[in-house]
Image (cartoon, rainbow, N blue to C red; front, side, top):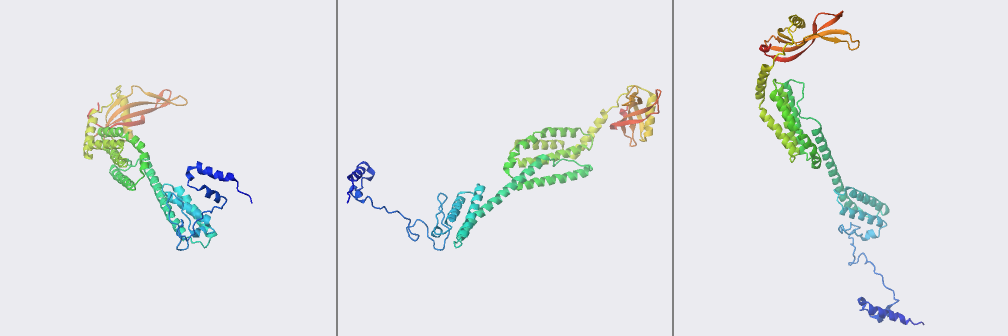
Length: 416
């Protein structure tokens, strides 16, 4: 029988002396125990009350939640199932879902639900006897959350699309202008309906909880368009103030349309200064212009002043024979107006040449003509007569060549 080497005892003594952490170990007893087998620590049995894993009162309920920082443990039936790896993978996917957010991590959520569904199918195929009701219930809870998040995502996307579409129309097309070929009275009625439809559309948009991020992205274009309004308003107001007929009311309708439009823009962009300033500029102009009756009175006054200041163009020469030619031509035109005064505007005949051959084809003369209409009011024309070239320096009789109205309402006493 061989004796154990003495150096082994010395080694144990050295450990005892040099390692303070194990000074309480008896070196003699430790030396005697060397070579004995060390028992392996095993997990307690499933039914052991000191077990660290939950036991099951029925077949295999879902393991209790352990929070998002630790994996869900498997119960006894899962541990002994042929589908154990798939069950573990299923709960791993569920643990990730617990830590995720369906709304904020949509794609991660979707992939883990898909992973859990795949493992659930594999569990059923590998271990048909395994009760998956608890697993299915747990998965259904997260699938419902995902569906809700998907619906919310779709709703958010639709709201953004509707907001973009509305604002594109708002800034891309003129929805409140007065534009019609109808009579003024019919045109006003059509314009009022147009403005009511626009206002209703804006109110519906504001009530639809539009996407505020999209609205904010359009602030620059709203400001840019608003910056041009004051100049346009001044132009319209000047035109109306100088108008001499009822036609000026159509320009007034344009200002009314602008008022409705910029009032709507202010509602959509309540914190932007430029649209507010534009809206105020329109309202101030409308207030200064007054009522329709007040504008019509101003138009009549402007017309009288204009007529007083409208003079007949002075004659450059006096030629009774040529004036007679104009009277004859006017009579042949059948206007049934009596000539009051003719002022010749050209001293000599103007020769017309053929554009290709350069040959003389005719000659013209122009005159300002005041004629009295059947209602007793006068009108001021510009009339040109023509004589065709017949050859050898000779011309035919005078005929009408062209005419235009210089003033449709002209004071007869200004025919001088």
